[in-house]
Length: 324
Image (cartoon, rainbow, N blue to C red):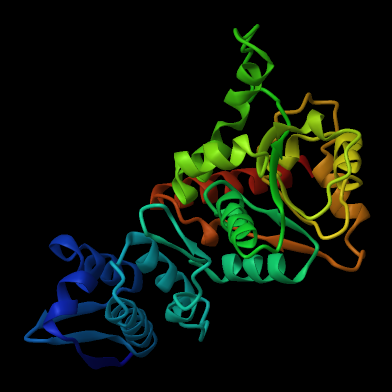
């Protein structure tokens, strides 16, 4: 197998950003693609087989493009660029960098970081109801929250409603102290965390007091009709079929609904069927309902989360094959 050599020019101000601390990004690319990379005097030399060197060149060019746009190169950027190179995907990561949904209270841009997330955001824009299905860390709830806040700021909706079923994650919490709101708040904490990060605690409290933002357990949705609202149902895998039907039939005119869930993390009793699983079968051919399935390639948390998700997926596949 013939060995080829590619040379990429890189400005000094981007070299450190692309290479990473102690050249950790370069080392990861070398180890993953089995190439040798030499960085010296504003040049990056890639040595390897024709296929491997081409992939490494593509990865580095994408990272350089991101750096030129003012981005700090993260582990997730490197991992995703490597993932795209193995898929022979011509899409450039820099294309994802064009779309900013909103900014957090600290000024950090919120934007899709993978092709799956970009598809998810596009579906939210174009469909009345969207199901976002995928493992932990794929940004299902966070991106939906960002889209909801953006819609509210643009006067596309009058209200944001965030809900999730109050089911204990395999633990017996007993009788929690306090009033009804205090009892359900622990179940809704992940939603509060995302809201605080995107819009700030003061803004959230102000809008909550005005009734513009509502965070409530799913049981509170019964009997209501929700017009001109952006509604997010989180942890939908823990709904029963009756709860899911009840929720979806609350939708009024001018509303948009996002249903998020991870089908591998159900906390329902063993003999109870998930309302999310039933909804995916029943509604798959209904017009104006979008379905987006994210996977471990869309995980944007710590890279170790991606490995954990993948390990569990492989384990479930092996167990399923044995049972068959």
